Length: 317
Ligand SMILES: Cc1cc2nc3c(=O)[nH]c(=O)nc-3n(C[C@H](O)[C@H](O)[C@H](O)COP(=O)(O)OP(=O)(O)OC[C@H]3O[C@@H](n4cnc5c(N)ncnc54)[C@H](O)[C@@H]3O)c2cc1C
Image (cartoon, rainbow, N blue to C red):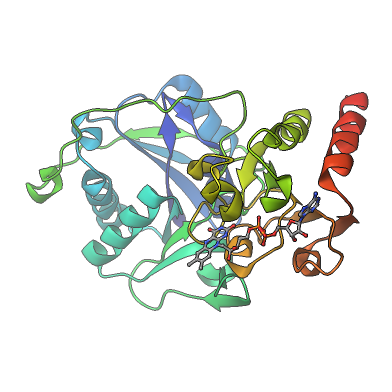
């Protein structure tokens, strides 16, 4: 079966969920080989990668790979593309993943597809473009297909692989050492899941009315074990931090469930959430454009609807 490289996203030695999604996708198309860049591959991490289908785990454990900004990872993958001749390379469509994908495409003279939301036979990728108004299928026509896949596009499915670890030494070029990481500051992490990784997102918009009222949104999010998102109107008003903005100029999310409360559904907001599997809209205006997109809609005042919903969810726990 054709080998497919999957660049592992890991933090503190833990494999991120998006990698399990990529492995699931790779498994449906060939034989996944996970590529671990940097130190920290543990037996537990290897077992996790194997559990989700990795037949091979390339371990490039050199500290240098993480001492410099992205370039070493692109060089590592380019080296593996040359030695293993994989059928495709999958990375997560995160800011870093997309930069690596672009660099790798240049290095290997290959085509690259970013922000894929699906990948099928022949590495034909699905993309949702123009603010999600158009769905396209595209295929790399040159070199090794390099595809950056959006987090939450695929549900991870355990399917055991051999998980054979192969050590990889990387010879970094001087160019790859051009930008050194001098400090790392850990972002404070709350109890909620990370927005772009969350399976459920509850977002509030201008209809929430104030910063204090966002506690209503947070209450539902916590009942569902969800992340909190916000429209730009809400973040621009200073009601919620900008890092939680969903949309064209904010984060792109693709959860299993997206709850939009007091959000009109402007095209720029849709661009960041319309690939969610199920969309629930709560809006007092029955003509709000968000209802065109929603699978389920509640016409009503969110200040009445959301607390009742939260209570109901909590009752069923
Ligand atoms: C270049 C550019 C980039 C942009 N990028 C983004 C982006 O990344 N993300 C983003 O979100 N926007 C973005 N925008 C802004 C976007 O165009 C909209 O202005 C914004 O999404 C509107 O936010 P909203 O839906 O919260 O507010 P509004 O459009 O004002 O809608 C508020 C909604 O709340 C409803 N409502 C009011 N009170 C209640 C209540 N008590 N209960 C229930 N419903 C209620 C109203 O009926 C209304 O539908 C961008 C705009 C531009 C020009």
